[in-house]
Image (cartoon, rainbow, N blue to C red; front, side):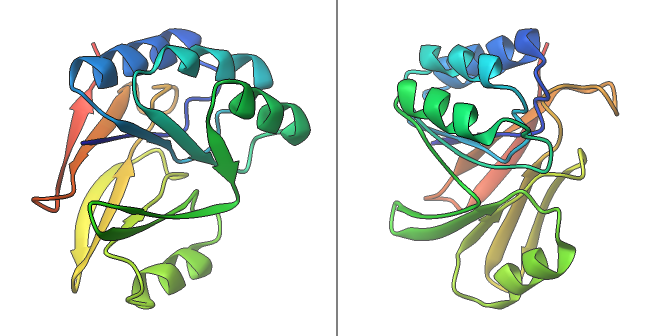
Amino acid sequence: MIGIMGDSHDNVEAIRKAVEFFNQHGADLVIHTGDIVSPFSVGYFKALKGEFKAVFGNNEGDRPNVIKRVEDVGGEIAEVLELEYDEKRIVVYHGQNPGLLDSLVKSRKYDIVVTGHTHTPEITMDDNTLIVNPGETCGYLTGAKTVALLDTREMKADIHQLK
């Protein structure tokens, strides 16, 4: 099971709730779709029971220290992240360049494209490519703090609102 969150924007309480949610639901991998924002926020991911991977968003200002903090919690961060999980090819990109995001989807190289940036939860299929945007963990724009759970065996994702 993969937990997906993004656009946490330094909302420490929302990050804590997301980490607790993913731990309760047995996520052995958590993907952050970008806009963690500040290095201090990264430390809260240390409580994850699963692996942590992230991409940069358009609001990370102190990238060298974000990288250091992600490494300190045993995670990985990149501009675009490619990985394989349950024999599924996954790419993670924040989504600030819609043309690049569309190219990743249309490339047919990936089974799953994980994105963020819009703060709007979305789960869609484009041919055989599952596209997942967990919405915003911070809840600042929509008032809803959302994350997603992805079952790669079933190729199914669900959006969950954090309480």
